[in-house]
Length: 203
Image (cartoon, rainbow, N blue to C red; front, side, top):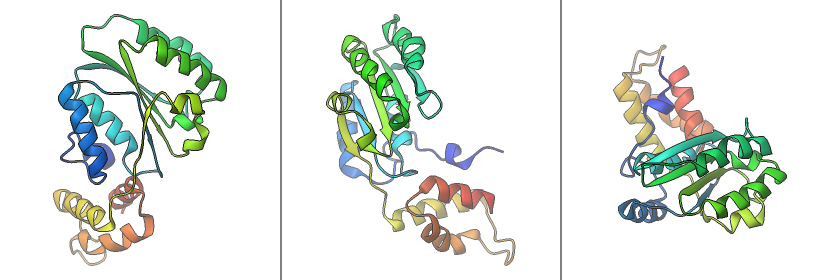
């Protein structure tokens, strides 16, 4: 069964809920066909990874995605990122997404700082993190930093209702549309949209 958090992950800025000011800035980047190094931070489940992947999907780029909570050490920089960033490409730009970058060790972050500079002509980096203070200052200074804030509860309710209708979800006890219970699910898990969607799917 396909995970709904992936099935309904936005692929365009128009589908992305919330953070209108940031969306406008990203829209300008996409029109130009290029981006700065970016750092998205904020609480879990509010769309940081979604926005990073959305940007890459809408650019003519080669993409390397790394979940830094699993690959956090200096070997990842040396064995994966540097070879990718220094290789030839027939696309406009190469993008490295480092998801959950606050897990990267300080030593690896220091090495990454130099990599960002040496590969600046061909490669852009997008970092996501929950805890900005865990990213070393020299790395922050090389990125344009955006705080991703949660959409309003009303926006989340609209999103979850839309998913529930599309999936024809019914409450097992009342056989009514599950959207009748969306408010309680949102109240329980807000602002973690990922958790809300997973809860709806698992109910």
